[in-house]
Image (tube, rainbow, N blue to C red; front, side):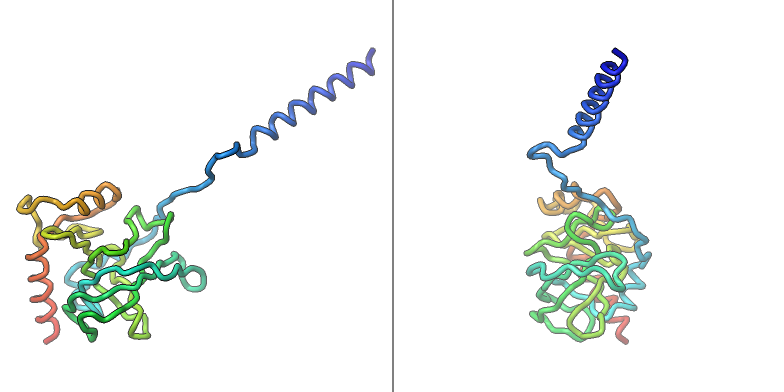
Length: 208
């Protein structure tokens, strides 16, 4: 009888272990995909500082994602985008030139919930030459990024008092509204026309 009890107890333990193991396995169709935001120290660069220190200030149209760069000296992965210059405000490039732009983060691991560039989007960017005259990274990361959508522009990063706010003068475009919903971090809505005039004026003054 004692031997029978031991056998029954052993069978019960085996059954419990098997059930626990089954519970830890993924169920059919269950997704393991994770979407996260990388929290990092964002370079606190002001507008005036970016105007003075950037190698290239330009309005660009994003053509396509061309690469993801990680490892090596890159603590944070970067996504490379082929882009066409629409207007140069400062720097040695020309309108219609094709350049590569490095944006911090990658798909599924965006920086502080700031979305990655998308094909067809237009940005005004404060850029630094990586050294080859073709590939540029963004001065101040998100703080040097301005998403242009018609009469309104969405500045990523910290708000600045000296920049021309929209203040309800123009209705927000659908793309701006969509970006705002995607972002949980800081941003500022600006008047596109007034911003472009200011950048052109400030860039010209800095050049002399």
